[in-house]
Amino acid sequence: MGKEILCGVVPAIFIFLLFLGVNITPFVVFAAVLTAIYFLVVRQGQGNQLALGGKKKNSKHAVPKSTIQFADIGGQERAKKELKEALDFLVYKDKIEQYGIRPIKGVLLTGPPGTGKTLMAKAAANYTNSAFVAASGSQFVEMYVGVGAQRIRDLFKEVKTLAEKNGQDSGIIFIDEIEVIGGKRDGQQQREYDQTLNQLLTEMDGITTSDKPRILVMAATNRKDMLDSALLRPGRFDRHITVDLPDKSAREQILTIHTANKPLADDVSLEKVAQETFGFSGAQLESVANEAAIYAMRENSEKIEARHFAFAVDKVMLGEKVDREASFEEKKRVALHELGHAIMSEIARPGSVSQVTLSPRGKALGYVRQNPLEDRYLYTKEALEKQIMVCLAGAVAEEIYYGGRSTGSKNDFEQALDMAQEIVQSGMSRLGIVHLQYADKTQIHEEVNRLLEDLLEETRVLLRQYDVVFQTGVSTLLEAEVLQGDEFRELMARVKQAEELVG
Ligand code: ATP
Image (cartoon, rainbow, N blue to C red; front, side):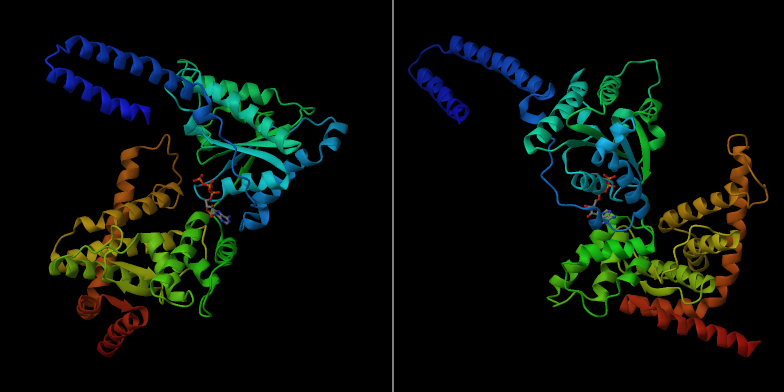
């Protein structure tokens, strides 16, 4: 407040002196020097205080007490079991001492984003009645040398103080994104991160069985391959727990947890939603439950219905509906493209198309919604080839009706390329088993291209037989924007009947 008054009063005095005809130049110079000194000394001092772990920014790693228990984490049964076993070392400390076992000092949680690693750490703190402080690797990255190391020291001090204050026997320090400070050291250049990492290792080495409170460091990363081996050796982060994407039953459990406080209509089957969300993380499933509730609220619907969940899954998968108004020609091209995917999908897996839609969502101008498959972790060559053909079919349809492709197929080609590479790398191509390190890159590239060219040709031959479906489908889509799976299958059946008549 004082600063604001000063900013108003000083110019006013200068104007007044000027008005009286006084030469104000010396005053202005003096004021400028004072301001410069203020910024150089006072602000710099504040900066250092922040950077050097001064009270302002740094002492607040304590996380508001959370009530998360292991029961609030859906699925992850194996990870929870392994973590609980590791935590028993904190809980049954007398026994550990009796057997002369060295304490577990660090637990590393690895897995994709949003799978519940932070939840696990919070649940661990409640399970063991420990004080809990958390920080993220990126918070240690500073331009001031030595600040990161100071912050590590502060973190250990803070957890001890917090545990003492709460009368707890143990404390858990959680460091998210550990790869930021724990990346591999090349041994040549001394980086600021190295000091931070060294400090963490020193602090961890200092943890003993008789410490009061007992400290456990938990860290999370989705890039374990990047971590320095010094972090992973026995006595440091020697318990590695994988927190993976949830399988179908875990997805259902997560959805159950996140819909427990929501009014669900009778037609909602969380099992079906779980089936439709293969590859979703816990965080995405939480978002599906939340978005479904938002759709229901917007419609003033008393309960959340199955269709709200269908909208929510589409939104989380593809992004929000957008108002981008495409031209008639563009819409027609997109309709043909999507029908290409849908026809090929039905040929590859009858009954697989749930809906073809011609409304822009996220980056897509249209999309085909497929009926869910069982979770699959293994693919044969034939299964991969069929999926590649489904991906290529959009571009093939454009070629048939427009004589060329458009940028709309870029994403499809990326997926098709990934799968073709999978075929080659899994030893299912003409090249046999290949060692990627020694194999000739051009040879692999040629094999992937040959695979794709063959499948493109096969897709062309198949799609040309479905002109009736393309023609009728396009008019329906341009008019109604949506073609339901059953309607679509009827169209496909007409072609089959006509073929039989001719045959
Ligand atoms: P990141 O690697 O991005 O830090 P993370 O693995 O630490 O992610 P969390 O922060 O633990 O993920 O999870 C984010 C949110 O996702 C949670 O707050 C919760 O709502 C939901 N979530 C994730 N996994 C689960 C799960 N297994 N059960 C219930 N909710 C979950």
